[in-house]
Image 1 (tube, rainbow, N blue to C red):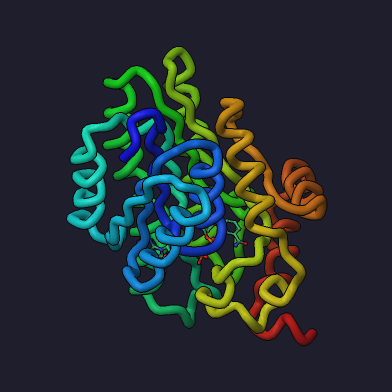
Image 2: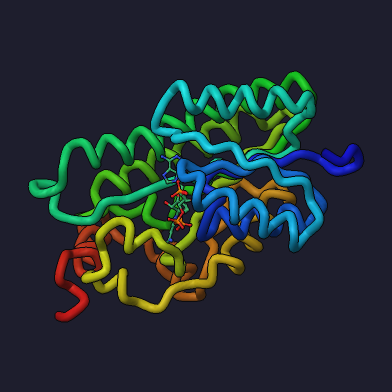
Length: 266
Ligand SMILES: NC(=O)c1ccc[n+]([C@@H]2O[C@H](COP(=O)([O-])OP(=O)(O)OC[C@H]3O[C@@H](n4cnc5c(N)ncnc54)[C@H](OP(=O)(O)O)[C@@H]3O)[C@@H](O)[C@H]2O)c1
């Protein structure tokens, strides 16, 4: 790795918002450790970023639903001997459908990845950052964090957890050099909805924001030390404003219209 570039780590960097966050961090002068669970997707993503930016990009495959594999990622970071200047905890999945129909195992996968692995990595990386005397963390939450999510219930709840968690850490760390920023994208053009089996929903079929734009807004907020940023289209920003005033029952009804299976054709 090059000595004059700082080190950033990005989870869920093989595609979508995470790929863009990693690519743009490399463009902003960082070397990278990039992670995902799928070697076949991660390696070409790492190679593309390195080729396009000249950064040193080390792929570390680890299925973050597993405690042991998350620890392996932490160990790979430590093995570089370099402090982590930026940690982007972005890996996340959803699962659409009625709670009565979805598999319990799939709900646990959401919790294990979105919630458990984020807490795990934040614990390890923030402690290292505190010892080094600097560091910035970006946690990918969602505008969904402020909405009860009928037909995507565990996912939205996982993002509410991340939003609360990020904001609590910001307060705990306010007198330190460490920062924590919550990235709150609205619907964004990635594999996310297809993987969540939501192609037949209104939100799945809707026009979505460009992940490059979402990532750029996230990184601007991260380096400005902001507590959170709503990222994406004007519609997303309007939704986030509405979320501040609408009662939960109305937000749940709005979400239902967008996420109910079959809603795309209604
Ligand atoms: N797209 C949206 O509308 C939207 C809106 C708000 C928030 N978000 C959030 O943005 C983040 C990125 O999602 P995306 O939209 O960019 O979708 P995506 O393209 O599907 O990206 C998800 C990333 O997570 C990785 N991942 C999945 N399971 C993993 C595991 N067990 N261990 C490690 N990595 C794993 C995937 O890599 P592999 O498949 O290669 O393992 C991929 O790199 C997620 O936290 C998502 O909740 C998305």
